[in-house]
Length: 248
Image 1 (cartoon, one colour):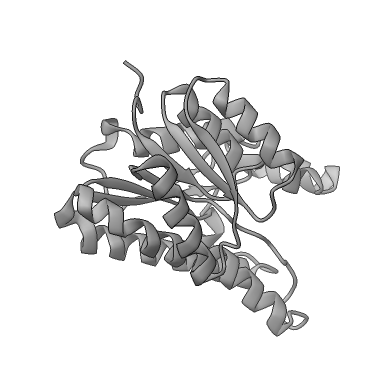
Image 2 (cartoon, helix red, strand yellow):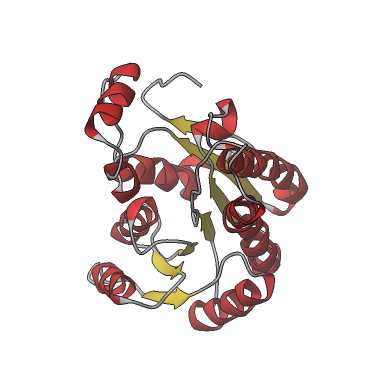
């Protein structure tokens, strides 16, 4: 039997990158997948087709994850369409990196709202059905810089550190109702975003990692699969780094 047979997951920001890898990994293990992204575009339609090819139910939804009211609307639609939410993966995120002296209020607010407020929005909306089910797994994508901080990323680091605090708090708050909450802290993962980094800078990053390479979205996805499945039934309130022993 597949690890997520018959379960339903929401994965936010899943038209590309780590979110898409998680959605594909879940679908390959028998999970129905509702996924979101900011726009209903060709990437969303292509991802939906890829997921449906596994013989599961999959549907994409346009969603502004930073909006409380829009998130509530989308989650209500997902509940109507799928009837259950067993797993929530809060993956939606952006970066607007710059030194604090140059950072604008808009750059700060945008990153906090998309990265951190979205986790509150989706967890708040999804918990109502998880509480009724008395079960659920919430998986929040943080980052190693949420643990260690990073120059030029005070907004991003703050948002990802906030996710860790939220994750641990929700694990304590909802644990008595059979709901688990964990975070994943990826390190240097090879995606479209990191692909824009100059070659010399990328090489310096990789040389600083004990495993001497960047990770793949699929390697993050397999940790999410563990946390979504019953293999991790007694794991809650934890932060799992996926970073190749990168210094944190």
